[in-house]
Image (cartoon, one colour):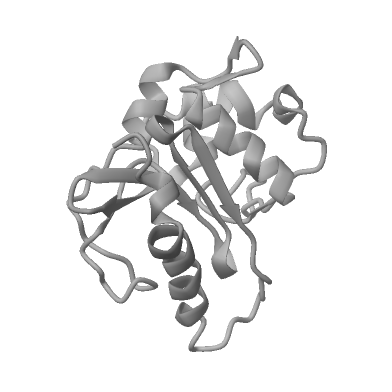
Length: 179
């Protein structure tokens, strides 16, 4: 298996080598020293879930993407990968957590929230309400953390809806700057 397949074997048809070589194998490039990432029974990172880091480190990851893969002057991820991964590929399909709101689409490991039917805001969505959203035109990265629960109640979707309402409705004026 190549490195891309070990990162996300469920998406092995996508070339994830740029992401893996740029940051996964060396989080210290972002000044991230404590990363917990679940592994599958074969010892490979699960890829699409199970990554734990502090809000400050989430912000660094968001800044990396805000700056098109560059962090403190070093190009860690190719610009083209950032563009491809944060561009909606699925159509605006919605999510279970959004109540199938058609303002949501999916790229490569990034969700995309469409605001005002014209502005796409890429965001990483994590368990329990963790989010990293960014918008280059507004020069902004927004991070949320919520209490993760390994055994969420059946109504855990409510937490996701509250977080999304906060980010994409209450604070949308920040994300829409520069439109």
